[in-house]
Length: 142
Image (cartoon, rainbow, N blue to C red; front, side):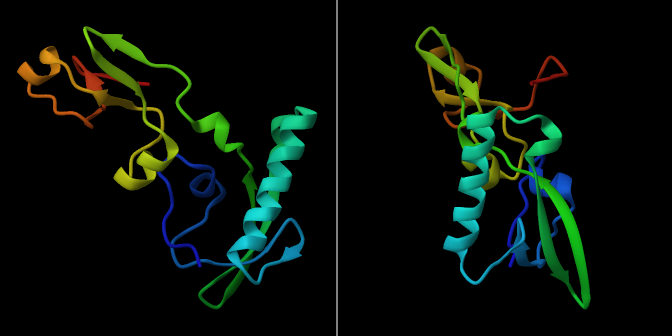
Protein backbone atom coordinates (compact mmCIF):
# COMPACT_ATOMS: atom_id res chain seq x y z
CA UNK A 1 0.00 0.00 0.00
CA UNK A 2 1.37 3.41 -0.97
CA UNK A 3 1.79 5.39 2.22
CA UNK A 4 3.57 8.55 1.05
CA UNK A 5 4.46 10.20 -2.26
CA UNK A 6 7.66 12.26 -2.53
CA UNK A 7 7.03 15.76 -3.92
CA UNK A 8 8.59 15.93 -7.38
CA UNK A 9 9.33 12.19 -7.35
CA UNK A 10 8.71 9.65 -10.08
CA UNK A 11 5.77 8.09 -8.20
CA UNK A 12 3.99 11.43 -8.16
CA UNK A 13 4.73 11.94 -11.86
CA UNK A 14 3.32 8.47 -12.64
CA UNK A 15 0.08 9.29 -10.84
CA UNK A 16 0.46 7.18 -7.70
CA UNK A 17 -1.54 8.33 -4.70
CA UNK A 18 -1.49 7.44 -1.01
CA UNK A 19 -3.78 4.45 -0.47
CA UNK A 20 -3.05 2.86 -3.87
CA UNK A 21 -2.39 -0.87 -3.62
CA UNK A 22 0.50 -2.10 -5.78
CA UNK A 23 -0.42 -5.43 -7.34
CA UNK A 24 2.23 -5.87 -10.05
CA UNK A 25 5.43 -4.15 -11.13
CA UNK A 26 6.99 -4.91 -14.49
CA UNK A 27 4.59 -7.83 -14.99
CA UNK A 28 5.52 -9.50 -11.70
CA UNK A 29 2.91 -9.98 -8.98
CA UNK A 30 3.90 -8.59 -5.62
CA UNK A 31 3.43 -10.37 -2.32
CA UNK A 32 6.12 -8.65 -0.24
CA UNK A 33 8.02 -5.38 -0.09
CA UNK A 34 11.24 -7.33 -0.73
CA UNK A 35 9.87 -8.53 -4.09
CA UNK A 36 9.03 -4.96 -5.10
CA UNK A 37 12.48 -3.77 -4.05
CA UNK A 38 14.15 -6.55 -6.06
CA UNK A 39 12.18 -5.79 -9.24
CA UNK A 40 13.02 -2.08 -8.98
CA UNK A 41 16.69 -2.75 -8.13
CA UNK A 42 17.02 -5.12 -11.10
CA UNK A 43 15.45 -2.55 -13.44
CA UNK A 44 17.65 0.28 -12.11
CA UNK A 45 20.75 -1.89 -12.55
CA UNK A 46 19.71 -2.69 -16.13
CA UNK A 47 19.20 1.02 -16.87
CA UNK A 48 22.61 1.95 -15.42
CA UNK A 49 24.40 -0.83 -17.34
CA UNK A 50 22.69 -0.15 -20.67
CA UNK A 51 22.36 3.63 -20.45
CA UNK A 52 18.70 3.38 -21.46
CA UNK A 53 16.86 6.31 -23.04
CA UNK A 54 14.19 8.01 -20.91
CA UNK A 55 11.31 6.08 -22.54
CA UNK A 56 13.09 2.81 -21.69
CA UNK A 57 13.32 3.78 -18.01
CA UNK A 58 9.60 3.24 -17.47
CA UNK A 59 8.10 0.28 -15.65
CA UNK A 60 4.46 -0.72 -15.67
CA UNK A 61 2.59 -0.62 -12.36
CA UNK A 62 -0.75 -2.35 -11.87
CA UNK A 63 -2.58 -0.85 -8.93
CA UNK A 64 -5.93 -0.90 -7.22
CA UNK A 65 -7.36 2.47 -6.23
CA UNK A 66 -10.59 1.97 -4.32
CA UNK A 67 -12.73 -0.25 -6.56
CA UNK A 68 -10.76 0.60 -9.72
CA UNK A 69 -7.87 -1.26 -11.32
CA UNK A 70 -5.36 1.05 -13.04
CA UNK A 71 -2.17 0.68 -15.06
CA UNK A 72 0.45 3.40 -14.60
CA UNK A 73 3.94 3.84 -16.02
CA UNK A 74 6.63 5.08 -13.68
CA UNK A 75 10.20 6.08 -14.37
CA UNK A 76 12.72 3.93 -12.52
CA UNK A 77 15.49 6.03 -11.02
CA UNK A 78 18.81 4.87 -9.68
CA UNK A 79 18.95 6.14 -6.08
CA UNK A 80 22.55 7.19 -6.61
CA UNK A 81 21.31 9.68 -9.19
CA UNK A 82 19.24 11.51 -6.55
CA UNK A 83 21.92 11.60 -3.86
CA UNK A 84 23.78 14.88 -3.33
CA UNK A 85 26.97 14.76 -5.39
CA UNK A 86 28.23 18.26 -4.69
CA UNK A 87 28.50 20.67 -1.80
CA UNK A 88 29.43 24.25 -1.16
CA UNK A 89 31.61 25.24 1.78
CA UNK A 90 31.29 28.84 2.96
CA UNK A 91 33.56 29.84 5.85
CA UNK A 92 33.07 26.47 7.52
CA UNK A 93 29.38 26.15 6.73
CA UNK A 94 28.23 23.48 4.30
CA UNK A 95 25.34 23.64 1.82
CA UNK A 96 24.27 20.84 -0.49
CA UNK A 97 21.22 19.67 -2.45
CA UNK A 98 18.62 18.00 -0.24
CA UNK A 99 18.80 14.22 -0.47
CA UNK A 100 15.91 11.99 -1.47
CA UNK A 101 15.46 10.68 2.08
CA UNK A 102 15.38 14.16 3.62
CA UNK A 103 13.03 15.36 0.87
CA UNK A 104 10.71 12.53 1.84
CA UNK A 105 10.98 13.44 5.52
CA UNK A 106 10.27 17.16 4.97
CA UNK A 107 7.80 16.66 2.08
CA UNK A 108 9.67 18.93 -0.33
CA UNK A 109 11.34 18.22 -3.70
CA UNK A 110 14.81 16.67 -3.60
CA UNK A 111 17.54 19.04 -4.70
CA UNK A 112 16.57 22.23 -2.86
CA UNK A 113 19.43 23.71 -0.83
CA UNK A 114 20.04 22.26 2.64
CA UNK A 115 22.33 23.59 5.39
CA UNK A 116 24.33 20.52 6.39
CA UNK A 117 26.72 22.35 8.70
CA UNK A 118 26.26 25.72 10.32
CA UNK A 119 28.82 28.51 10.57
CA UNK A 120 28.85 31.94 12.21
CA UNK A 121 27.43 33.61 9.10
CA UNK A 122 24.39 31.29 9.11
CA UNK A 123 24.03 31.53 12.90
CA UNK A 124 24.04 35.33 12.90
CA UNK A 125 21.54 35.31 10.02
CA UNK A 126 19.18 33.09 12.01
CA UNK A 127 19.62 30.09 9.71
CA UNK A 128 19.86 26.99 11.92
CA UNK A 129 21.68 23.81 10.99
CA UNK A 130 19.43 21.52 8.95
CA UNK A 131 17.49 24.34 7.28
CA UNK A 132 15.96 24.01 3.84
CA UNK A 133 16.60 27.11 1.73
CA UNK A 134 13.86 27.39 -0.89
CA UNK A 135 14.88 30.82 -2.24
CA UNK A 136 17.48 33.55 -1.94
CA UNK A 137 16.35 37.15 -2.63
CA UNK A 138 13.05 35.72 -3.96
CA UNK A 139 14.92 33.55 -6.50
CA UNK A 140 14.04 29.84 -6.06
CA UNK A 141 16.94 27.52 -5.33
CA UNK A 142 17.44 24.68 -7.83
